Amino acid sequence: MAIRKIRKIGDDILRKECKAVKAATPRIKQLVEDMFETMYEANGVGLAAPQVGVLKQIVVIDVEDGNQYVLINPEILEESGSQTGEEGCLSLPGKHGMVTRPNYVKVRAFDENMQQYELEGEELLARAICHECAHLHGGLFIDLVEGELMDNGSEEE
Ligand code: NI
Image (cartoon, rainbow, N blue to C red):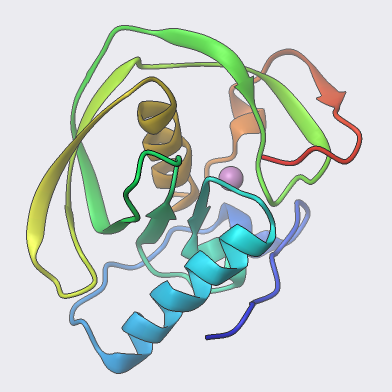
């Protein structure tokens, strides 16, 4: 396991389209482990591969619901409802803003063993799924911020 460097806003890689993962190679499994370690070290609830400089469709999420979600090649199947709340990103440390997201999403993805599954999320999990999946297509929460981007001191999300 290793902590990887988190790419910050201004790094072009954050705006690029990620490629689909074809197989669960040892390298992919190592990357997933490193992404969790990097996310926990930074006190985040989600991290996408481009944030550690890898243009592959891989997301890890832990919203402290007792699960560690790995979403490889995720595809959002359904969205409903809406929630507006504060959102931040490890690639924009110390900043947050108000973002409206669906309150419910259903996503289809592969896990780290390339087993396909579906995941439903509400509230924070739905927000995290949308935020992280957007990273795979060059999207950042600042694209959706309503009003001002705000400073949050040392708090990071
Ligand atoms: Ni982010």
